[in-house]
Image (cartoon, helix red, strand yellow):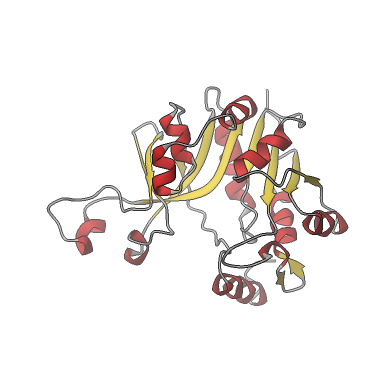
Length: 251
């Protein structure tokens, strides 16, 4: 029996590097509306909801035909925000889709939902093989290593694995490196348990929330994807996305 899946898109108005980016205009549509539009093109999702802490985002989404809910301003992470929404949602699987991915491919979301239909998977996410040496040592690019059963062993801002006896420039010639794609799928009951966990030392050291889950013994299945995506974190990212839309590479 197919499990019911709901996509929840957490969206805050505050943003350090790009103020009010959720409402930034991208060729006639706001960033958050573009994310919602892309999510609605999924074939396996039963519903799409934007979870926000600000009335301006709520009004922007609903004015454009979307569904949004107001959540607490006290949440420290997107996971906490979607957990609040999950309490009142009739669904088996909750997808946490980042609110700053206006060009996300619907097929990428469907790929993760399909994998989460498998019994026994509490948390799922995606990764993509790195091919650019410049990103290998970029702390903004999160790397992941997995076991032979696609379960994450560790996430880090450092390049992992390190190759002890070779210079940095040769590492990619001797090992496969994977970039974490920051979209998560949770069984609803797992998500609600995760939201009750306290921060851990590894999480605080790397500033990566998923390390809290690993340290508490939760398995995170991490599946390789061929889809690429562009997150908007800076004014430069925003301009890049605008250029792609203008070139009609994306609708």
